[in-house]
Length: 106
Image (cartoon, rainbow, N blue to C red; front, side, top):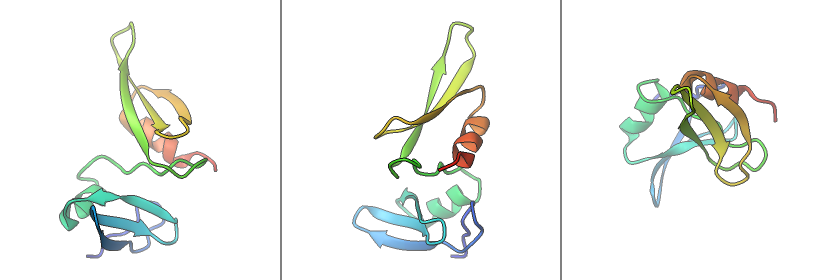
């Protein structure tokens, strides 16, 4: 498998762990998620699935994206850490929320 890190472009390391397949980038020092099959890793990193969210810069834990609908009826998206609850605000599109989260400073 010649899948590359979407952040630095280096080859990722794929390993089997007790809960399934995991993808890691040694340069970015990040866990890119856990998957049931190697093909799911390829799909996720090639853009066939939603882009990967970087871990929280404060605590290193996984983050999640939530969708909210306010009074105007338009969806808003929030990316925040499941552990420390850090976020970068609400956005009108998933793409903008992911891009902003992944580009924030440590």
